[in-house]
Length: 612
Ligand code: F6R
Image (tube, rainbow, N blue to C red):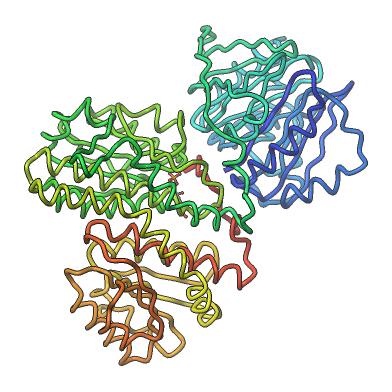
């Protein structure tokens, strides 16, 4: 959802910014741009990926130690060169990059036009840079003060960075809802949407909080005020992000690397939290609030996209193991529909990025109504992590591929642990079953490893169905949300239309779509509904659909019916999604590669959705 990177210090800024833009490209890749100050501001911007920007700056003199860059996910105005950031004010003095949406841009634009300002782009960002110019000029302000006062007139979400040619020894940054982090080096400072462009240079960061404006100076000093102009002091934190973890490590795509990392990332999500031999499991975040959680009348999980699918699986887990009524809410609906929330509700927000705007707004609303808010988040220090009362990081490491894979299985690992702990604490599961589930959970990484070994077979299946236009994914119980997730993976990276359904719902409509060209992926690893799933497969076969079945090792009945079978190791039903989703990720990946799709950066998508 747009990536921002800025540098001020003693080094040449442009190589740092261009490298940073490549690291941030997963946030949006509709266009890219760069501005560097050296006697004057030079700006270059281009529709398309950072590669296109690289082509147009080749041979240009981009000397300078102050500058910034932007990679865009279009919100206002189509992706083209003119709408690309940075945007420049009418005088040419002020340049600005922006991640977010200025909601009242239309009225601000009209007022500025009345004052004689003209606009070349369709963006809300060009309005903001001219608003700052007007405020600065009419009130005779420094750039920092002009930014602060302008932001008091703005409604919306933003992370912005501003350079003024009249004060080239500083860079101004500000944040409301969209992320912004400052890297603190020796006589140099950075601003970025996340720490990935910064870690090569420093592990010291400051998280800019809501409604704060930071001024970075070229001598390495900085100051922060809020929109009321009160000085705030944000602690310097150390980030533990290794450069290797944000590179491809020999894999063709980040998504493939992340699929293959899952034996490790699932183990990391459990590290120090479980010991089946000794019969214990604990989550630090839960311990502090255990009494309140145990007495919760209701659990509400809220999230978007893939994280919402994890939440759906958690509904089965919490209701079955802990016997607590559980509801799952799309964050975008939950935040606006005036839901009934009571003080003894336990709200769990799930988010890989920790920055998803709707999820963040949903938990702020629930927090205001007195509920206990728990975050299950991957990115350490992210907005959602900071907004919650307590939580558990999933420790999956940076997920760069736009399609979420390892974060999903790590979320499931933490959710499974929570449900097992809660079920045992509440006396809803026996000690024997508790131990059995813990033992099983510990064995999941090795079982995922075994599934990864059948990659060639999955590739072969992919080659057989890659030309389909439509597909169905069916599952029951714990595997119904897995069907939704499998369908989402396929559609988002291969652009094949895919729908997930509870297997029994097929007869109520989707069955009409089935013909000899339609691949139907059936997730049939549940012990509980096995016979019912077999009947659903028979129904599909009677209509000549192509069945790809995910079954447990040693299955015979479904093997005899299906066109293609992928075996996964057996496990306890509540943990089965951790295994059954893996072949679906691999299938989607191979199909997308065979269709020549950009797997890591699918069209129209962005990794972190920081606008509504
Ligand atoms: C799909 C995908 C998205 C995200 C969704 C929520 O592969 O990645 O559907 O799951 O945008 O993002 P987070 O988890 O960062 O809140």
